Length: 298
Image (cartoon, rainbow, N blue to C red):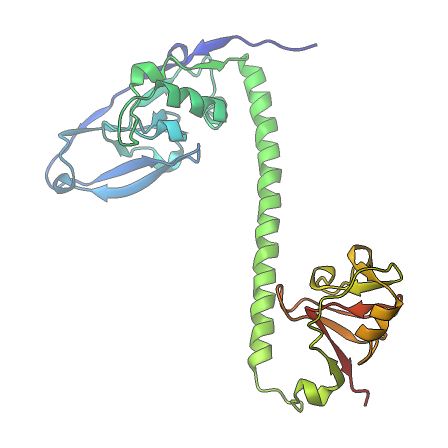
């Protein structure tokens, strides 16, 4: 069974509210801002009369609905929290008092975080230079679903439980990224520290280095895979994507040495640095953009 809730214009549950306070020389006023995309209201800065041309400001109370009429089309809508209670709003921030006998503030909060709500605000905004202001009376024509209060509370609790899990997952992802970055920086630090072991060149460390296979292979056979740069991943060799060559081409391309188990295949052009250790499961030859290191066994 599906539930159909009535939709009502905001004017049925919200009324413009002004709590004027005179701007007096020598007095300080906490001002309010509203973030984009439903991210909430915040205390911007404390100002005095020298910092504003306004003669009056309007006090905001916890539970008020407040918008930035210039950027409401970008989701600049919020429910005032305790943190901004008592802040002062200029005329750019129309404020509305909710009828909490019909609607709970958190229900409005989640409604104003939807793309559909932002689109409606955009449609009702007018202006030029990217600053499309909305008139408060037009803002109040936007319709929202209005379930019974108990249903609003149930749904808000469910939404916020899911939102908490999403934020937890985001936190774990951020932590994983931070740990990966820390590990990488640590690895770099170790790499550039004085090495207690003997340093040697690749020539010294390798029994042989197979390179300079600049000729383009002749892919006329189907007997042996010819590993190209695109067939080498980070630690893997994909034989299934390799093009194949016949016996004569294979012999020519392994004339200086056929890859053996334990050799290292290295991409020297294109995605330089990709490399993999040969596992010895299949015979193959090298394409023109890869090279091979054979370690010296000591």
